[in-house]
Image (cartoon, rainbow, N blue to C red; front, side, top):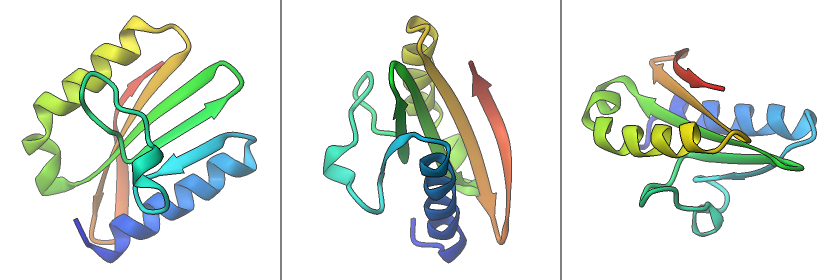
Length: 102
């Protein structure tokens, strides 16, 4: 994915999480450091003490194509009470939250 808004969203969301006190790894800045959950890497991974956030950011056309991978990430989040899953779709210059498991 190379859309400008996709990159813009990941950067801004990562910055917002950092301001909230999270340690943030993202696919743009440090892809090799992002942990793998059930064989899948999210676009953003954030940690605050024991709490973890798995954050997926996909362009609209890619969200449905990624369904199997997303299910693996959601399954991991459901199995760990300290992990949440957030799924975002970006299109043009807008975004929407489409999945959330807390």
